[in-house]
Image (cartoon, rainbow, N blue to C red):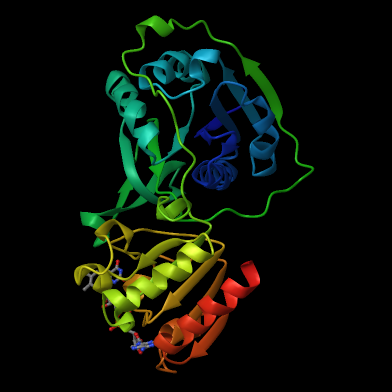
Length: 329
Ligand SMILES: Cc1cc2nc3c(=O)[nH]c(=O)nc-3n(C[C@H](O)[C@H](O)[C@H](O)COP(=O)(O)OP(=O)(O)OC[C@H]3O[C@@H](n4cnc5c(N)ncnc54)[C@H](O)[C@@H]3O)c2cc1C
């Protein structure tokens, strides 16, 4: 009988979340080590067309759980739809994004079935005779913890979004796709989502942002940070920064990036007046293209950058903003 690593995928506004694709790719690596297959379960309404993208990122089997009552998230609804499915699947490991929605229902299932549930996971490996080994961050990211279960048990692991980034899809890759239509009782859902709004790129969760413009201590104060924000708004990027900028009150605490802050993996990361301390770099290593402006040519951030500019951000930012205004008009 085939053995499966099961991944729970999520969609938002008709698209798979990046965190889901990261989980599929992580699940693929774990399954390869175990000689197992990857089964992805996707729950929602009219989400079946997304199955091919899951295959392209490493799924061998995609089970789409479709019901009109699942168009908007409900923890009760997801539990009703997924619990029987998971019971039938007998996964070797259950992997899901560490998202708000997953946190609303998976812990309830773990308690019901007395399974270990691990959040804030950074890496999942296999040791010994096939036992899961999880590296997770703890104490607000100040420490890393290694957990191993040296006996056979199903572990539910929630992977922190942004920690591994999403690799290139393999377009021709095929998976066995099944659409399941469960019988649900929507009247029994005690919670329901009334509406979901598309994310504003400026306020989006940093770990989902495609572009981030960051300011550090080199911004010199709230005025400098306002310039950084102006650029972010102009190019539809999310505002981020360093812990020092957040500690000074120039940036909301939930927007600083690094080992004790947000882990991000945008397509574009622009850093202004950020030195590139190890604790900051470890939160943005997954960035695809990095542009840094720093007055100190020896700053580590310039070494990490694909395009580094040595100069004063107070001179460079106004020029950049006015040039972009001309181009974007
Ligand atoms: C346990 C622990 C955990 C931490 N976790 C984090 C974390 O998660 N995230 C994080 O960011 N930090 C974290 N830190 C802090 C980290 O060590 C650094 O102190 C911090 O990242 C530095 O922030 P910065 O780059 O804004 O400031 P600085 O290191 O002071 O750098 C400012 C930079 O701006 C440049 N600059 C100055 N003026 C200008 C100008 N006019 N134009 C252009 N460039 C200019 C300077 O050359 C310098 O490179 C942590 C520290 C500890 C001890």
